[in-house]
Length: 201
Image (cartoon, helix red, strand yellow):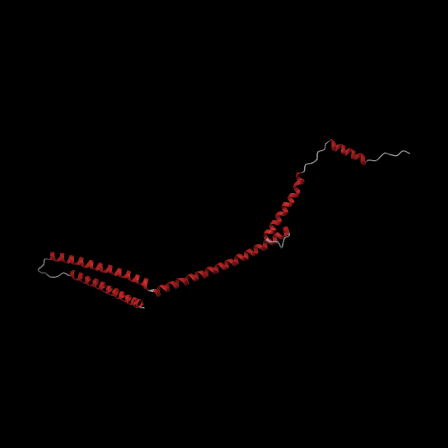
């Protein structure tokens, strides 16, 4: 509990130091710039010669310009410290930024899901039409209306292979040659089939 009470107190002290630095740097810039403007004013004759007064004014202007530059660099460092303080300690803003990013990503996810769902429906319709077209065309070829796609394909392939196997031996068998044995067999067959001997009375 003591640490939780000390943490806001340290934040308040740090913010007060930032505020003090801001006011001091702005006051330094304004004061040095005002003095530079006053130095640029031409004064009346004094006991110091004009050359000496000019060198003194030139040196004073360089110093005050360096002070202005230093105050500007201090302000830039203050801006960097404030950014770091906000990043490390402004938890509500960080949580809000995280919530906004999560909402954007959820919206993107929902859009992607809708597109994927629509694409799935279109692909399903196209596949259904293709299957209907294939079944209607394959039924006239292999008469397999109730066969699945792969089974109808293999049935058609097997039927064509069987037909090729039956016609191959017929094409491969050579024609018988007409030799002397075949001529003798033909003559014997003609004699056997001709008219027999006539009976004499």
